[in-house]
Length: 192
Image (cartoon, rainbow, N blue to C red; front, side, top):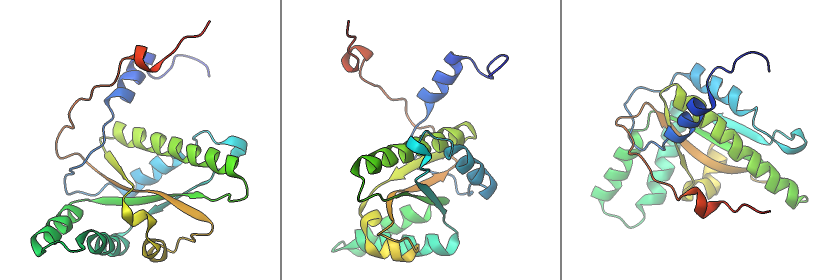
């Protein structure tokens, strides 16, 4: 790298600390080009031996509707109609959806662990990029991502990929609250 950095370390640190999970979104969808730009940035995450184990599925209206139906069915269970409608209303308010998978390496457990970590780094890259563009992300890992019907619906081969998460994104409807974290002295040990 040459020249001055585009932001100072303090500015970059502030951006990292400001990112929040967003639960409630305004109705307008995230432009597809912005999502593709975020995937472009995500793919530069560190990955051991350059395995690039990630695959992003950007869901269109038809896919989203099918996933909403599956989630509603899975969550509904024995709930009453009012509870089912509440689940459906919540899902209908999410403007943009994508899925991230990680390639499986069943014969190489260390590689699988490294690849999973690389995919998590890709999510962080993507989330930070979108956050800087005013878009919030929620990484969901509920029952649906382990359901065979979900894999079939998105044509994901369970023998080759594992779903890491279903992601909801959009422009925040409100400002997520500030968070507190444990002090550095609680999570860091300095050794001689």
